[in-house]
Image 1 (cartoon, rainbow, N blue to C red):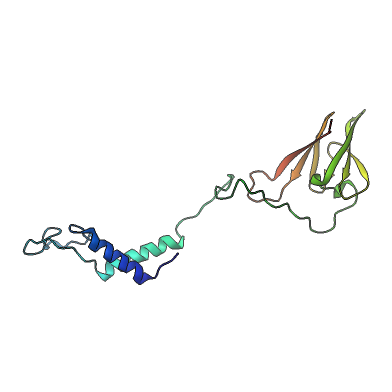
Image 2: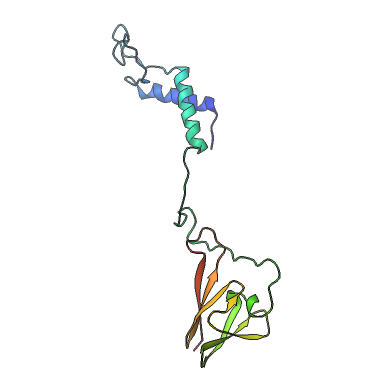
Length: 178
């Protein structure tokens, strides 16, 4: 909340008066008596000048504007981003191609895994499509790749569109139900 400049000046003056004797503004002249005393030796509270108040308020405005500092996270996680709230799933824009290149990893259901002479092949079905597909290691899907298939699971490398993430991808493992 920002306050009016005259209100901040008033608070500064009231604070200095309430601070009591011995408080100085830091601008002492060489011919002046010792701090907190006048010519006769009685204790007085110094009153800041209008120039001092303007100088303090200018410094405060610079700090409040935030122009003097920046934050560069580099390859680190943003400390101000919540760890509890999961970012919304990215909506796919445009038409997806037909077949395996048009499948999304999150929509896939693993139906089976078969061992062939060349390695394992997985049978998957997309939730919104009636067809099933056979995929193998190296196949490219709409939002990632198949990186490994074993006897009980398939590992995908899913590309994510979150600029605050440390890595631009994540590994998704889909297992066969027992």
